[in-house]
Length: 289
Length: 161
Image 1 (tube, each protein chain N blue to C red):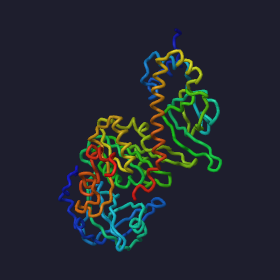
Image 2: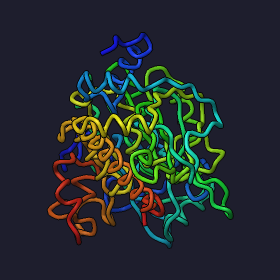
Image 3: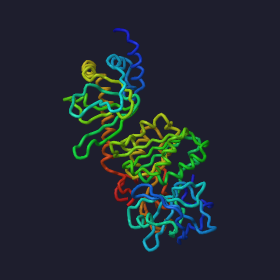
Image 4: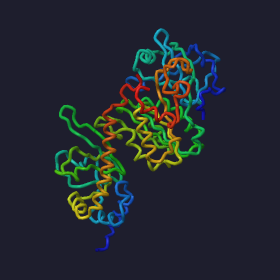
């Protein structure tokens, strides 16, 4: 587990400082109408490694810099994969980059999902919306080291069927015999044949597939979704200290210097973005934090 | 008291395992089993139609049904999906016992069917049974309201400003 704010020595990358390195966009794929995945190639000979849950600062020259979770496999980290939803000036510029364009990259930063601690346990992944992107490296890891874990369950909620990320992969994962995948949308057209309802309504269906007392839960999505998901997990008997959430704030420096992402006594960029739920539960309901 | 029939024994076992009724004591389960039947439903069947009398309370054993509402300018709007382990609706317990939404079967579905008037009579005759069922119903209503409120929040809309 890497929840220490001190970066793991193995992860001291040339990209981890104050100045970005130039990565080249080698592939771009549309996931949903406003969300794209970019594959970024580092300069020749530059190593890059990360742990699932970490993020990079991506800099579009002349526009600005934003934190984006890494969404590719940690065991095959190059090219570096990022899934980006266009919601502001920088993210809009990012999703409009084309193969051959350059982007500034600093990172990886932040803590990671507790995949070592989860070994031998059931792992329940609960993702909402774009929250599946930071969880995908954890899923890749679980499936790459499948024998090290007990049950693997993915509960994924999106706004509508057309907002579902990684549809082909979801279908492939759903076809596996060694994991359970349950998908829901908040709003579905009549022709949608899947589940309709918020992601927490999937827990009744998932109940037979995991033992709460022996479960580690990884949760990422809008904060309100994570609050209600954590309550549902607790109600079902998942120990509080086995629940992990990934938080987002306005991160700038990525190293805990600037204070933009301060969250009570914590800095999301260096103390998170992945936190044990007990560490942040009391802050998640505080106003003006 | 008459000996339970084979059907009643089977339904008793199904009720004993269903999340809505599994906490009930044996004598209550037996009473419910004595009025219940198991029904097989096909895609396109309606369990409830908005505005029409509700004649049964359904406990889903398998399959899937959709809670839907019709709006003239938008057509049928799916609101929620219910599946194995869910109970369908509460209009059977509240006058005027008429459905407020459509419940349409989406895939082959098996359900325990409790006739509404007989269930209400059982509850009238046995207040302890009534309290147990109403407590469970209240818990179901509370979680559906919570889920509906989260749906109304449209929480995935531009969640990363």
